[in-house]
Image (cartoon, rainbow, N blue to C red; front, side):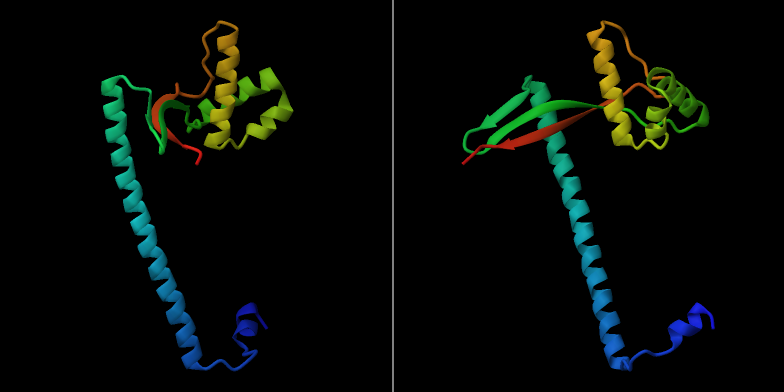
Length: 157
């Protein structure tokens, strides 16, 4: 007997009405989830638009921080991000750099690099280079782009 035949053997009697109710409920939950997910996406888009208006206004006025007493402080921060190399040659350059500077064990940790790990690694390397007074370029990785973000810290009540 194959898996499908075994699965098809009833283990208990479940009425068509019960199964219909279960499936209908599941579908309603999926529809509700999809609706909330869509609302969440739309709300996030509206938030990003509002955030961009604030960033533009703060940049235009030369502000880096803005405090609303009793509410909190908004700060402008630069977040540098690099992307994981997409082509094989760029990956080889990056992996060669890690192997030559940190050895095979560290290389193995970074062979499957997600963008957060790569950004953390890049930041570390850039800070070391800056402290040594030298320019820094991570082989196989494009220069970082700068994304302006906001950080909110609520006042303690």
